[in-house]
Length: 259
Image (cartoon, rainbow, N blue to C red; front, top):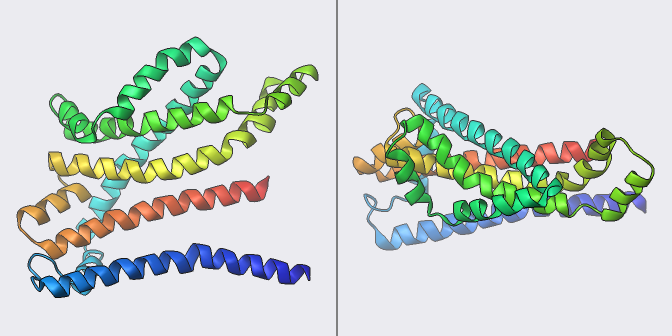
C-alpha cells in the first residue's frame, strides 16, 4: 500500500514537471505555426520549423559557444555579487532596524526604476562589459534584498527565544535555525532572479552592441533583417534561462535531501 502511494506521488511529480511544460510548449508552437501560416510572410514571421532549424545550426559554431559563455559569465558574476551582498545587508537589516530604514527607500527606488533607463544612464559613463554587470546588479539586488529581509525577519521567534534561553552559540543559531528557515526563499527567489538577471544582461548587450555576446548576435540579426536567426538567438536566451533555473532547482533538491 505504501509503495502504491509512493508510485502515485512519483507519477504526479512527472506530470507536473514534464507533461504540463511540454503541453505549454506545444500550445505556444501551435499558435506560432498557425499565425505564421495565416500571415504567409516567412521573411517577417518564419515558421517554428525554420526557426528551430536555425537554432540547432547555431550550436555547431565555436563562435556561438564563446558568445553564450561570455553572456553566462557576466550573468553569474552579477548574480553572485547581488546574492551575497543582498544576503549580508538583509541580515544586517534584520539585526539593526535603523539600517533597514535607510536601505528600504534605496531598494524601492532601484526596484521602481525602468530597466532601459537604468541601462542608458549607466552606459553614458561606463565601459560596455562593466555596464552590463552593473545594470544586472541594480535590477536583481533590490529583489533579492527584499525577499531575504522578509525571510530573515520572519524566522520563528519562539525558536529564537528558546535558543537564547538555552544559550545556543551564534554559529549554531545560524546553521540550525536561520539557514533552514530561509533556505527555501534563498533558492526560490534566487532561481527567479537568476533568469531575470540573464534577461537584463542580454538587454544591456543588445543596447550597447557588446561584441561576442548573445545580445550582440541578436542585434546583428535584427540589423541584417535575418528574422530566423533573430528568433533562434532569442530561443538561445530562453533555453539557457531555463537551464540556469533548472540548476538552482536541482541544488534545492540536493539541499532538502541532505537535511
